[in-house]
Image (cartoon, rainbow, N blue to C red; front, side):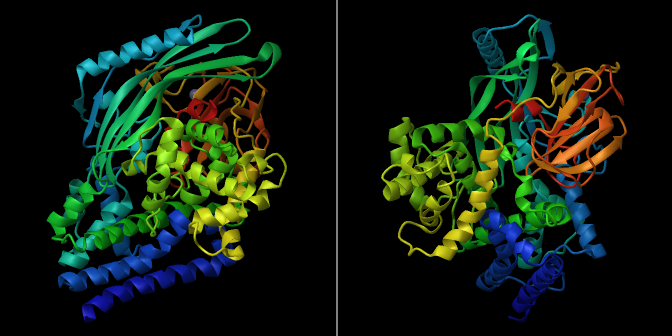
Length: 632
Ligand SMILES: [Zn+2]
């Protein structure tokens, strides 16, 4: 018993220390800031320390396992020992930044990759109709289907070292995290009394490493201006399957064509994109098969204590990760500003926009409102699980899902079951259906809500309470407000920044796409981290998002740059001839951040425009295709 309370105390002290340090500096703002994240991050984050410690203690008590047996269980502070653990884990899961080529890393994250399909980027003058494009996409897909997958060595693949391949970065999203490895290491230490060594860290990373399967898929983009059309063929890896410690997932696609127009009159540019877009995500078997098996074989966990141990482990994953990644970033960048300044329609991940529109059309709830609920519930993390077992993007409990999924199946002709609860489409359709039901009960019809004016703000309060607390909970105004106020703020921002925005940042012609291309300076293939838009020197460059200027100044290779960050992405505007903003400024969609130029490593007057995901404090990593974010 002494040993048990010792572990508990270590965790408790660390927790106290963290919150003391945190709240001293941030005061009430901390709570205001985290309230939008309370379900996926805040509560889980708290639980990660308090409950996890409890679970560990319970676990040890139940199994009669060893306590800390002299080893130290540390939450990651800044001691040299903590730094050592961090280094070991990072070296086992691979370099944090792409292109890093450290021969000393094991990189279990990319050690098991399988790919099929092949093709080289090219372009030709003249347009292609969407039908012709679709036929070409199908043909390429059949070709790769007949070839099957082959295992690749990421160290030599594409002549490049170690990196994730999925164009939407979904592999990186579900790849092994620091928190996953570290949680199991701590668990081994606490429950089996194993000393924390680099070998133990490696063993755990190897045991729980993911397997990824991809197809290199054709995407066809036709760019037309008044005088000419160009067809671009480019090839992108899209994830087919991922077997991870968080579940075994299969990703399904269908061919979709989208057309957008930028500029007007003689300057209008039409972009038609035809590509395989993600539709359903399937979970193969029970989501927890792999983690259950690991807990049973490695830790001899019994069927009885499996749920509670697994929950503790999951809380640990999230707790360690959020602290390390998101909270660090928020602490540095978010607290002095109004948190909602970081939110714009660009915060809605492109792969969910079609689904949100589909739900909106059927249930008459505006897209900006549905998106706000998702932001509040899961921060668009489709794998979210709350401590109350609410799951997926809209945080629905299995019981609620089960009682509403039939209505969705009737309305959409789908055949979803409880197994599909995490599926983004199933989850969003069911969540929206629930909202529509509560609003209709109150107002007779969803259409009687004043979505055009500001009436919706107060009108959604009661339905929001029901959605959050369940239909039978006794109404409580202050709980309802706690839940709904962040949703209102998000919704106002999404509404104001027009959900369907997506203009290019300058008027010009796209001359180079995102992804692999022939290096314009010779020297084989290079990775192009954004798109190039040719335009005259001095053309105004508009911000495509609200956000904060993370950096304005010069940067090697890019010339003069402006980097804007919002709640979801970093936006890079490079090769500028003039910069109009300062580091730290807040900008709105459409604001002019600078003038285009011809600076840096550049082949002609153009704007290099890139979008990267926020994965740490470095903006120069995790690039994604800007057109996939803009094209809607
Ligand atoms: Zn470029």
